[in-house]
Image 1 (cartoon, rainbow, N blue to C red):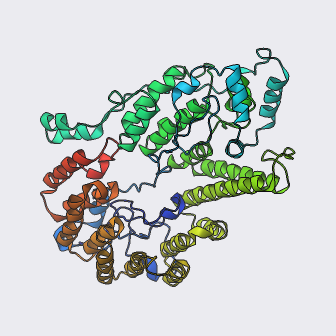
Image 2 (cartoon, rainbow, N blue to C red; image 1 turned 30 degrees about the horizontal axis):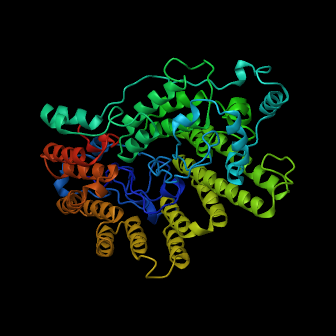
Amino acid sequence: MADNPVSSMTSTIESSNLETATTMFQKTSLNDAANSSVAARDAGVSSSSSLPIGVASVAKSSPSAGSTASSNKLKQYFSNSPQLEQPFDSIASFSSNTATMNPAYMSPTDAFGIPSPDSFLTPATEQDVFTASLLSSDADRRHDAWIPADITVKALKAMESNPPGIYFPEKDLLTMPGIAIKEDFGDPIKSLLRTYVGEEAASKRQVLNSSSVTQDDRGLRQLIAAGCYHAAVNLTTQLLTVYGQGEGRAGHPSKHTAHSIQLWFTRLALLVKLRRYSLAEVECEQFGQLDAPDLYFEFYPELYGGRRGSMVPFSFRLLVAELPHYLGKHSTSLDRLNSLLHTCHKIVGNLRAGLSECGEPADQLNAPMKDDSVKLWRNRTVRVMYSLTAVAASLKDYRLCGSLLHALLQEDRPSCPGLYAALGRLHLHLGDIPAAQSCFNRYLEVSPSPPRHSPVQGLLHSAYIAMAGNHFSEAVDTLQQALQHSPANPLVISNLGVSLVYTGRIRDAVSVVEAAVYAEPERMLHESLVLNLATMYELESCNASANKIKLLELVAQHKGDSFAVAALKLH
C-alpha cells in the first residue's frame, strides 16, 4: 500500500464541555485525515491537507488492509464528509423547576424547559393579567430584553396607544409560520434491521414514538430524553397544529405565545440534530429576523399584561444564525453572528451607561439588577464568539479562529484550560508543533493541580504531539497510559484504536475499540466511534458485513431513533 494516509473515517468525540468552537479542534477521527503524511514537521501545510487535531487519523497503511490497494481507491473507500458537531448538545437537559406560577406569565426556563401547553391555549383573565404584572421579575426582564428594529418599535407603540382591536399591523409585519412538509419521520434503525436481519428482528425493536407518549410537553421531553428525535419532531408537528401553525398554514396569521415559539425552537433544534438542515432552513425562513411585532409580549396585552420584551429565546436566535453554515453558506452565518454580537455589545453598553437593555431610561434598576444583566449579556456575547469560532474553523480560516480564541481567553476566563487546549490543536492544524506544545503547557499551568486535575488530558496532548510528528508507536504507548487512568474514556479509546491502525496493528485496534463498545454500549455507542469501528472491520477482513450487522443489532438494543445509521456503513 502506498505511504499516503488513508483520507477518511469519522469526526467525533469531545473531551471538554466548551462550546462547539473549541470542540472543532478535538475530534477523534479516521475521517478527515491529511491527504499526505502528517505535515506538522513543516511550518505550514497545504490547503488541501487537514491535520487531525486531537485525533488519530489513519495515516499509515497496514499490511492487513491489502498491500495492492492504491491510495486513490482507499480515498474513495472511506467517507470524506466530515461532520461538524451540532449545536444544542444538551437538547435533553430540561429544567427541573416545578415552581407554581401564573400560567399567563411564563418565567424564563432553560432551552427546553417548556411549560404546559394548556397554559397558553386560552387568554388570561383580567385577574390573571393583574397578578401576572405583580409577578413580573427582574429575571424575566433580563432574559426577554432585546433591541427591536425601528419599524417594530413603531408598530408596538401603535398597539399600546390604541384601544384593543383598533390597530393591527400590516400583514408583511407579521410572522406566519407553518409546518413546511408534514413528513412522518420513521425509525431508520428499524428499517436497517428489516433490510439486513429480517422482519422478526425489526418487530422486536421497541422504542418510543409520538403515539406512545402523552401529547404534550411531558411527552416531548420523554421522547428527547430517550434519544427518539425523529418521533419528537413528529410530536412537534401535532402540537404546533393546535396553534394553527401546522401543514399548509404558512402565510396565514396565527397567535403566538411564549410556548408556541419554544415549540418551534425545539422542533428546529431537533431537525439540526438530525442533520435535516434544508428542512430546518425552510422553516427558519418563516421567522425572518425574529423581530416582528407579534414576537413581542407587548403585542398580546390580554395574555401578558405589562410584560415587555421578546418571546424569542436567545438560543433560537443563535440557532438561526448558525444554521446557514451547515448548508455551506458560511458568509451568511458570519454576517448573522456578527449582527448578533453587535446587539449583545450594544446591550452591555446600554447597561453600563445606566440605561435599560434597549436603551431607555432605567431608574427602576438598582446596581445589583444591572450587574446581573451585564453578566447575562456578557455570557451571551461569549456564546456568540464560540459560534463564530466554529464557523471560522469550518471555513479553515485559522487566523480568525486564533484571534477569536485569544479574545475568549479574556472574555471566558473559567474556560482558559480548554481554550489553551483548543489553541494547541489549532497550531497542530497549522503544522506548528512548538507553538502547540507551548499551548498545551499553558493548559497544564492554568488547570487545577492534581488530584483535582486528571492527568488524562495531558497524556492526550502528548499523544497528539507524537501523532503530529508521525511517531504513532509513541502515541500508542502514551494512550495506553491514559487508558490505565481512565479505562472507559471514549476519546482515549478512539485515539488509541486509530493510532494502532496507523502502526499497522489493525487487529489490535479492532480488539480495543470492539471490547469497549460491547462492554459499555450505553456509553460507548457514539456515532463516530461506531464509524471508526465499522471502517476498521473493512480494513481487517472480508467478514466486515457480518460484523457490522452485529454492531447494528447492538445499536438497536441500546439507542433511540436519532442514531446516525450512516456510521454503520451498511449501505
